[in-house]
Image 1: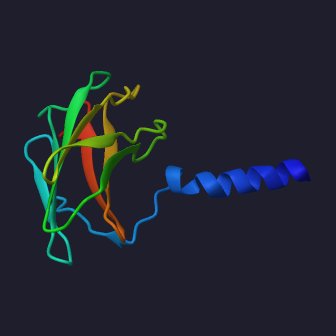
Image 2: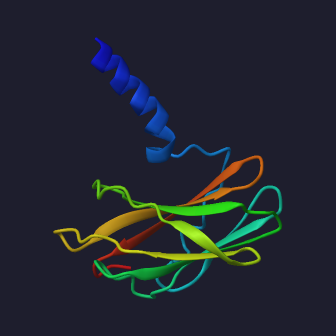
Image 3: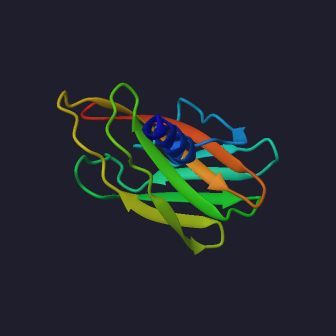
Length: 145
């Protein structure tokens, strides 16, 4: 019985890390293709978040750059959570480093899917002093853009 209680408590404490909670979720334009352009989103409060994946053809099993630019508000921390839409590809949420006012950068590596084609969701998670903002973006790898 104690083991079950320990598992439940550990799961509860780790759940924000595995399933991030957001105070505000703003959806990106589905027509914006991250493999061809930077994709901006305007927040309800008037601020702006832009995501750019450094490589125009996003590589698999090779590091590529990620850049998030924020404006109109003070971002304290930025992470980008990459998940396979139809297949669990493991935990992949790099924290980006501040590289100048409102500009955060880092890199990640996406694993290979055995079928070649893979649909992904990259959720930008921005923490401000009083809220957490989530902006999900969809893209595909493996020959179809």
